[in-house]
Image (cartoon, rainbow, N blue to C red):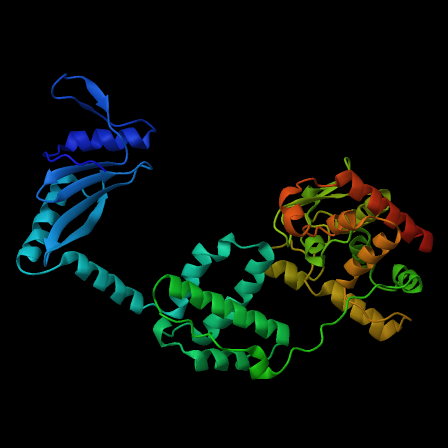
Length: 422
């Protein structure tokens, strides 16, 4: 960055700054030819005695004071222009030079003050900073699970200084929550990532979560529950299940489309195009929006749900007045509603069906799609799974028509089990 030593002028700085802000190049009058010439960016111009005005390609302008302390060259950023004008920058520079003449080192003192300010950070401050800078860039489902556990961390450690939290505090926090193994594991992952962020900010030299193993705290992970593939007889029983019509219709939509229960729970009629037979899910667990082909049986299910939903904007709206009132009048069903409906069905009607959850409807749909001859990659796309490896990076095809054909096969099969399916 080439510098020239000459006194600067307020109008000159204003014109340079304004030019870059408007997407133009800064110019100045050549003292020999008296013609305008463009200046190259980034630009650095000295005002004398170590005070330098800098202007970046992106239009950020700053005041830098260059000086020597103990024979070592130092730089101190005084502030940004135009927040600090030329006259104020000169005044600040004089004050800092007085400190240097007295044996001080303003740049070192500034770093020390910044470090001192960081050392006073509490876990509350760290969580807010992590949410603002890191969490917002993560996937929707990760934001949800991390957010839930950041709330837990804040409850237990919020007022504590970041530098005063040690491994024993982390262990005590994890043991204090009466939740399952998987949820505690997610809590440990979240707090580990939070303190990794603290290390990146140089608040701490070492992550207090290093060496903490969940198995050592609460034992080995329980066997992972295998997903079910409902048999044909179990599907026949489910399709005629005795439960509230809106719950059974919602469960049939989950089964027929293989979407996640949260995707249906938050679905709005604005995203369901029954004319063009497309259901748009704005955001998914895998991040990007997706379009679900609506085959005839699913369209019939949506029409029945619409007659029940009335004026609600949600496909499956809340029916409990207390929930609607709490959430502002119109709201989707509770996240546990469909699971509770299945539990009630199992408990009071005792069907000859293995106990399953709403998520098992996805594994059932996947298994039958494969059995019906749908290729593996199309089956994975029907469930909105990302394709693995390099294929997933470069293959941007949505397979809409192929998925439509697969869902048609699947729904025709369901209709063969129960003619009143839709």
